[in-house]
Image (cartoon, rainbow, N blue to C red):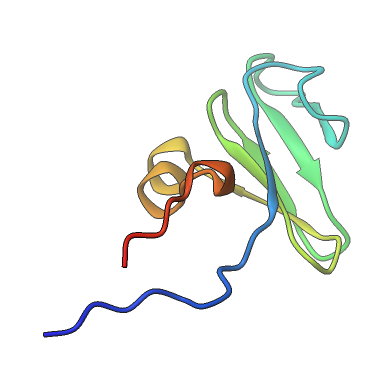
Length: 83
């Protein structure tokens, strides 16, 4: 069985959020001062400490839990091709 890798991996910007002030798009939650809200044009996202905020190519943002993000992605500058 052959192993394959994407020729041009998609890259994007992501910021790990821990507290208010870590990302300018996150506003304080009225219900929990340890969490926040990421307001977007199409939807709002609840942000918890440790979550990653992803900026997509179209300028929209999304939120992904730390566990899910770290199981799917690695830092682009740490990639080393193994052919």
